[in-house]
Amino acid sequence: MLAIISDVHANLEAFRAVLDDIAKKGIKDIISLGDLIGYGPSPVECILLAVKHEIRGVMGNHEVALFKKNTRFNAKAQRALDFTRKMVRAYTKDPRVSGFFKNLKEEIREGKVVYIHGSPRGSTEEYLIKQADLFGLTPKAKEDIKANFGLLDELGFTGHTHIPCICNTDFYLVHPAWSDYQAYPLLWGTKTLVNAGSVGQPRDEDSKACYVTFDGEREITHHRVEYDIEKTVAKFKANPELDDSLGERLRNGW
Image (cartoon, rainbow, N blue to C red):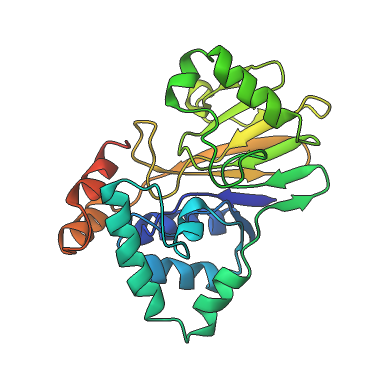
């Protein structure tokens, strides 16, 4: 059994709650789909926790941006990036932190399964299947999804949009809440894309942290986990280098 997490975004409380939930299931193998950092108040703490749990990971756009001079981030995200960069630089001599970044992959492929942040085609940048797409895929969305299916062997796990969902080559698209988070039966031979949602900054109007488990063969299951949101919000408010609204949005899951 494998747990797949994504978009922790330096939310230590959500990360701990999810790791506790994973441990209760007896799962030790965990893959992160990127954006462990960014936006949130606890980037180094989340890195150290990921290293402690030997989490394998791919790069998200926030990890990539950390080492770029120019980004396309909005003002709030850029301020958070500047804060994150300062915190990470303070730990550059810590081999756990430097090793974390060195060990990040662009993608992880295991058999016919790929783990990647944005999409098989766009790596860390492409926003594939957004909130509005859940209620009817536009022709452009179908075109983009079809192009990405062409790069899949069978199954792909992504993050980036913070919207948990599952889509197959018939463009049958589901949000896990529609089936009350029951296990999704995987049909090999029908290519499938799975968005793991977000641990630290959900954007599907559900404030609970989200992650996925995969039995390696037949079933994919999304899970929601409650955590101490107010503790995280208080950290935003206590940090003048972060925008308060980034914490307040956590209450509404958006």
